[in-house]
Image 1 (cartoon, rainbow, N blue to C red):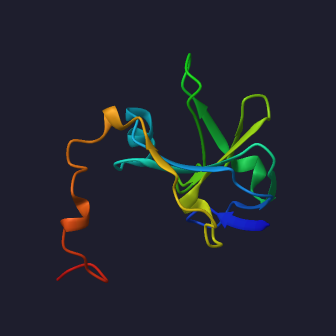
Image 2: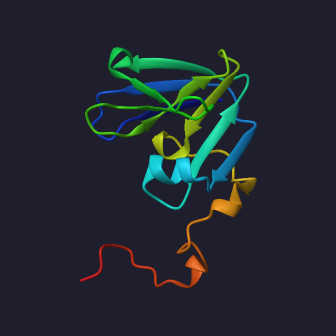
Length: 133
């Protein structure tokens, strides 16, 4: 399977060849800081290959020492980007960075003990097609 993606400003584009084995919604405090939201939404693969189509030299990566937490991003718009971790054996792809449809559904919420205090019963919150007036 082939997937394409990009950052918000379009300076960085990429292609991924292969399948994702896992899709987790991570509620750890680090992912909350990374995303500014309730959780990260990341796809994981030990076999897919990442190909940068444009902007490879612009990609920045932050590693929180001494943890395994890493984040790659566009320095222009701040968008989260794919990251190869664990000595090249694991590809982590922010689901929102893909331009193609995400082929998997999340298989679980992880680090739920760190869940944001406002992340409860969100399915009950009113829904709008656009920004409400």
